[in-house]
Image (cartoon, rainbow, N blue to C red; front, side, top):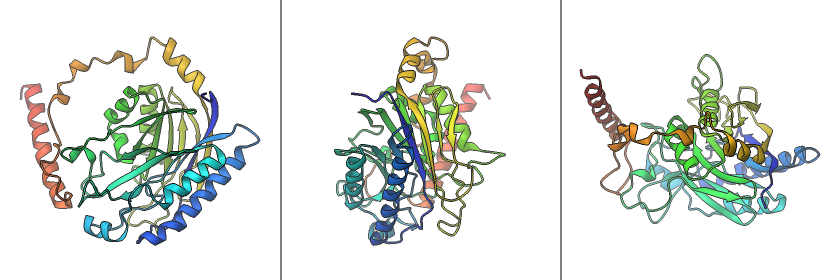
Length: 340
């Protein structure tokens, strides 16, 4: 039976980035303690049932090449960290969106993924691999780019706390990602992110809040967004502004951490009954129901094409070349549309 009203907790971390697998355990220790704190702190009020951690909470791509990541940091999934989270989920009867880790999969030798798991009391419920790596810097693979990839790109899980879909950080700058999760049934859109300054949670840009609110209102969905709060010394060369948020289906900010590095736990109510009622009765501003899909020929061709071979991952230089080619192709398309 669904729980129609509960609290979600966005837990932003400020942890050193492991440089080897053994060091990941300390980060998982701290995340487990934060789950205990979130559940205990909210217990007298609205019980926490969903806990979300940011991108890189378990491990970040601190090496420049796939070979170094495979040698020192990549792990299979499931692993000891997901098992410990599953035990904690069972203890508290909560659902946990893990921080990301660098994943190696024997089915795809020579590549790594940036992966987060939705974990419930019964174990891993879904695995999301970042579809839009932050190119050209991030050299982990997009599953979109691998020939023969046959797992869902945008999994949505029906749970007692709602239908949950997740995407990672840069994915959120592509409205198509969250639209597809919504089309797959998502009611709560989870953002696992490491969004840095100057694009982060502070003015004059504040892309973080702008995007979170836009994705919530255009999909009539709750957004639970945990952002990395690492201080500069923990993950140079960027500083990480936190600002974790919970947004309702009309784009209202229900709760947010004050911008700046450091650990924060942000708790806000998720009212599934209100969301489902709104989706059911709303006629105006129901953008998912108003889509004129045939009007957008841009999606009928490839702009940043998938790879033709599954061997290895693209380097920084190869990404630069592909981006340049994609820009030229896109410019030609715009020229055709405008008649220039």
